[in-house]
Image (cartoon, rainbow, N blue to C red; front, side):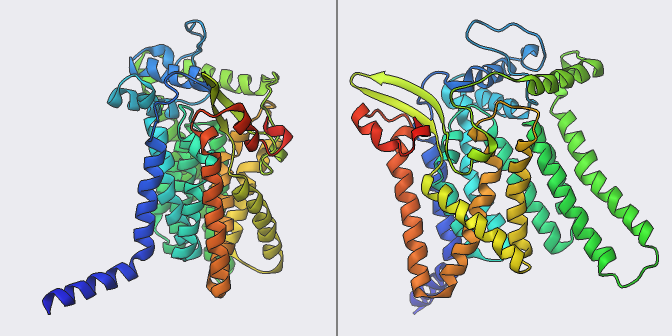
Amino acid sequence: MRLRTQGSSLMKLVREKKVEIAVFFLLLFSIGIKLYRLDNPDSYYFDEIYFAFTAQEMARGNPAGWELGHRAPKGFAYEWTHPPLGKELSALGILVFGDNPFGWRFFQAIFGGLGTLIIYLLGKELFESKGAGFIASFLFTFESFVFVLSRIAMVDVFLMSFILVASLFLVKYVKTGKTVFLLLSGVFSGASMSVKWSGVYATEFLGCVSFLVMFYRNIYTSGTREKRLPVLLKIVLKVALFFVFIPAVVYILTYIPFFLHGNSLGDFVRLQESMYGYHRGVNQTHPYQSSWWQWPLLLRPVYLYLKRYGNEYAHIYAIGNPFIWWTGCLFFILGVITLIRKEAPSLAFSVLSVVAYWLPWALSPRKLTFLYHFLPALPFMLLISAYFLDLLWKRSRYGKALVIVYLITACAVFFFFYPILAAVPVSNDFLRWFFWLKGWR
């Protein structure tokens, strides 16, 4: 009788926590598939000649890893054009796992894998739906662009992850009013811009959202006109503290090794000026560059790696899951139309997040851009898709069937493209099946 009662209680717990259990196994799979054969390729490829090489020098304690103007061995270059946090994380992987491809890429894979959990939590909080969170985490796990950038010693996956966490904490602040969540949002916003300067879009956007929320709660709906100016000033100072001062402190803290190696504040300022001058002055061309308007349509992926094995070739393409991306574009348009027709704050946050991390590139002084610059906006495209798929799931049995077919198709497309995402040798005859568009060659 006791065993039967315990079994009944266990089954009840499983039914109550079935979404969390599904996310747990999805998380294990997400981390596992990113770590599997992580040391393949077994040498530098694409921009690892900058990022991985610089991380190696950082791990060795070489000041040149943080500084400007040092000459690197032939075929390599010190990566000084971006802030140091992403390279410092790679250096930590090297210190833990050794100076080898697995060590270079370990934390990228972990961050990419943990994104499955982060986006679940964000989707659940944002839409107040475990179903929406699970759908978002499923799409994230089988998103091939995220997969590829989680397995190379570049820093874009860190940028994306910090923006997602900052967004999660801002949503929790909006729902609870607890200042600690606003503080954490500011900290992770600062971490994002300490990986790449484009992370400043997060501090600007999330700072604006927090201002509007506080303005609405403390002034717009207060019902009184007295003392509005002091309250407004207090709001402005609060936003400035959490989304200007705190991110700036985080940014400077990532340069502690730079200062410990004897560099001055003047050296720091000159380095920042040189970074801006570099990005503003980039006017080279690249065969796999693309413009901002091409990114959501997946018109020009980035060819990262090629190696011959007898009559077969191993390739790595930084390409998104076309089924997820193209349907995501339709869901994005549907989201804009929905917001025109009615108020939907959570959907508005997701749509505006895509806009905030994508459209500024249309005005960026940097003209040489690639598909991977769209990565911070991509998870919010997935959240928009999850929002509408969750509504469809709740509507009817037929809606559930359509969502299941959608998710199975997304998964199938990921595994179809897997050989050219993970350097699995294939024949040239087989390779032609992956080139759906002319721009993919």
